[in-house]
Image (cartoon, helix red, strand yellow):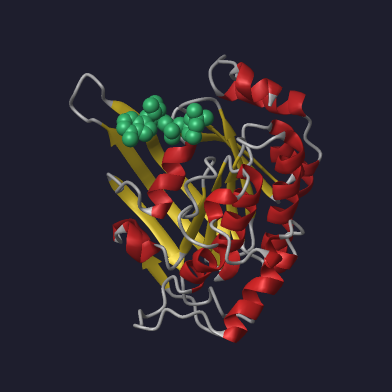
Length: 281
Ligand SMILES: Nc1ncnc2c1ncn2[C@@H]1O[C@H](COP(=O)(O)OP(=O)(O)OP(=O)(O)O)[C@@H](O)[C@H]1O
Ligand SMILES: [Mg+2]
């Protein structure tokens, strides 16, 4: 089932000024439900901007982002008919129903001054009609307890602790849990393990795979680590100067080596080489 279709998306920052920057130069991308797409590319390639256009952080200059919200969340059996909505025109807060995201900075996805369970409750209520009742009921607490338990970080026994007391890795794991608590139509991950130490990063990455596979969540994950880009997901796209310059899927993707990606980049990006950050990542 087609989940998201990006058609000729374009975005230029500061048009008509000396700082004009074409960040997305006419991107087309069709995403099937359950696809896990890794995105690589050098600094300034437009990776984050692409995610920002999907989430609605920035409006599109032109083009469309169509999301199949009919057969999405809550319709795992695919009973409902496809129903495409153009989220390219929806304000960010209205897209939050469909699109969840996790950033690189662990401080951004959670509210430090609130309790762990309050953060989860916020995520759980996302996109639901607001009621005056804020109290977290018993069954809801149980749900959070079980969800936290699977993180294996001991957070289930600290549900009323303030989130600011958590480590970066714990916070990022919690953010991921919050992003997937209500199955989003699309999950966007922007180098969400890059700020963590290697061991914690591996743990959060493993959790990412588990949570997304379990609920068959359509995911787009930016990484600067080419090995991770090859290892995770069923599709890989490479970006340069606001364009997708290479794509691999399935078996072809799984068989890739880092050297192959470097070679593809050089041949498809007009002789440019990837930044050291990418090569070493
Ligand atoms: N809010 C903004 N205002 C002006 N220019 C921007 C803005 N956001 C991004 N850009 C520019 O758009 C281009 C693409 O940036 P983007 O952040 O999408 O790159 P990226 O691929 O995510 O790079 P990185 O690997 O460094 O995160 C860059 O030249 C960047 O400077
Ligand atoms: Mg970026």
